[in-house]
Length: 167
Image: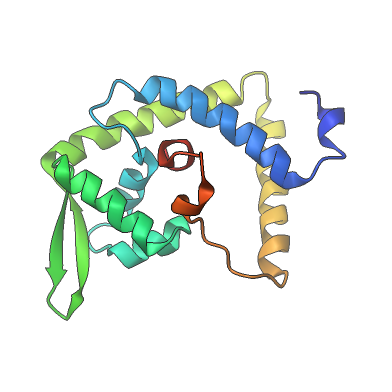
């Protein structure tokens, strides 16, 4: 798609197109890992250690609690994460990467770095800086605008699989 074609399109459509391409390239590379989905969530959990709860993960990822519960169950079943009860609030559980999970995150980070490099091929450092500056301003402008909070509800997204959304 050419930049002129983007100019009259809703940003949501542009972001969806770019996201679909990005996810496709990343998925092809991530398929060699011993998990099938939710790759990016593991990086968030690792970055938020030592104490991240399921609720915090839902808030960071802007997804509903049920989706996070399913995601965490998937990781626990595959021995990538473990839950530990918060002693101060027994309704809350902390999430910890297991040894297996800790071995996956460097590979996930490496693959995302490769995909980012591919995405910015032919883009100068200056253009990349402008891109992120503009993107940051767009985000800030929208963050300040009145809105209805709309976290992603994976179950309501129909045919889109969690893998397409949350890698």
